[in-house]
Amino acid sequence: MAISNCEKCGNLFNKTVKNICPNCLKEEDQMFETVKKYLKKNKTVTQIEQISEGTGVSVELITKFFREGRLQSAGGSEVSYGCTSCGTPITTGKVCKHCESNLTQLQSTMKQTEKPKTEAQPISFYSRIRN
Ligand SMILES: [Zn+2]
Ligand SMILES: [Zn+2]
Image (tube, rainbow, N blue to C red; front, side, top):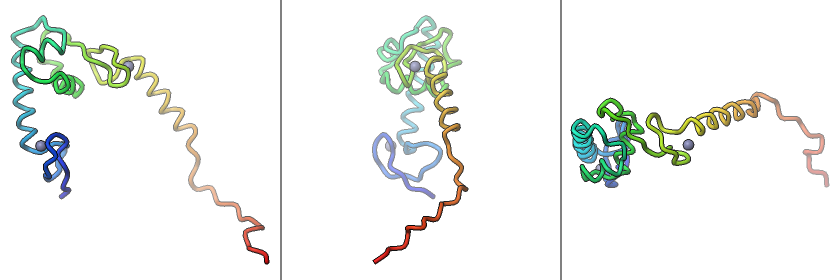
């Protein structure tokens, strides 16, 4: 079992799949339910700020719920939130289309430049110290 510090309150806990302790997880779940209920009642809301005002849940946390894809099906309208990378408003996923293609490009270049690790080290003739 791995012991880890909770991302939110800093308490030590037995790490599971989440980075936060059971107490904070419970709190987050309650907030999630609050936001979900709010979205069901207010189907025309499209701004995270509006939801935050209406529920008292922080913009940060609501954004996280959306990024995790947990709130996608809850509301009737599409709520936009910032792209993780550049902040462009998006309604699905974690990054905007532009950043997504950038990331894919970056990943393929990284693969191309990767050198094979099995290459033998050349033995130098001058490796011995001569006095
Ligand atoms: Zn905690
Ligand atoms: Zn972006």
